[in-house]
Length: 233
Ligand SMILES: [Zn+2]
Ligand SMILES: [Zn+2]
Figure 1 (cartoon, rainbow, N blue to C red):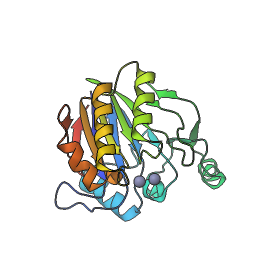
Figure 2 (cartoon, rainbow, N blue to C red; figure 1 turned 60 degrees about the vertical axis):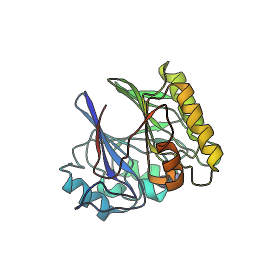
Figure 3 (cartoon, rainbow, N blue to C red; figure 1 turned 120 degrees about the horizontal axis):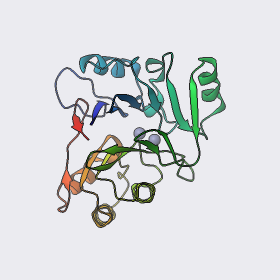
Figure 4 (cartoon, rainbow, N blue to C red; figure 1 turned 135 degrees about the vertical axis):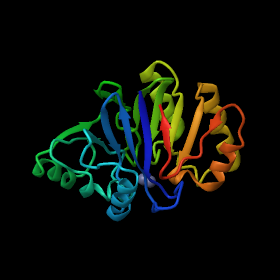
């Protein structure tokens, strides 16, 4: 039994939460608590976590998708004793030194790895901007969580399908489609449907126009997620 709660997004689901450019979500599965990215601003992350009753110091894992400010900028609010940090091996030397200085356990990721039961990294993907995505063993099938999807949402979904042996039941996070034309977005929607994805929950950097196109696309369920939204997985 698991749950994803969006803590940090460009949009909020209700009053009392701060919007902020970036993404962070708490993933809970069978008693394991993982923070996916931190968003960019400590004030936003801490305020929203507080408002949602989430203890940022009570996590087991911090999973970082890629080394961009809007995903790791608030890291100092998320570090605590006993935390294991899972990050792409291509992260900077300065970042790695910090993990060592803070005496945290680090898991640098190059290849796909199941680092905890039910939690798997796609491995580092992408040519210019390296990024890892997370696959969580949800009750209805694998759940794919993306940060900015810089390597391309199609490539990530394809790799996740190969690793899981079945398509993601849900793809949630930033899809990064702002620069795509309408027909390119429609092509991506078609690909995800053909792959067998059942639910899509694009947010953060997906882009308003692309979100509207995906929302209007028949064949899968569209879930509107913003900071404060919770999904059972
Ligand atoms: Zn990015
Ligand atoms: Zn981003």
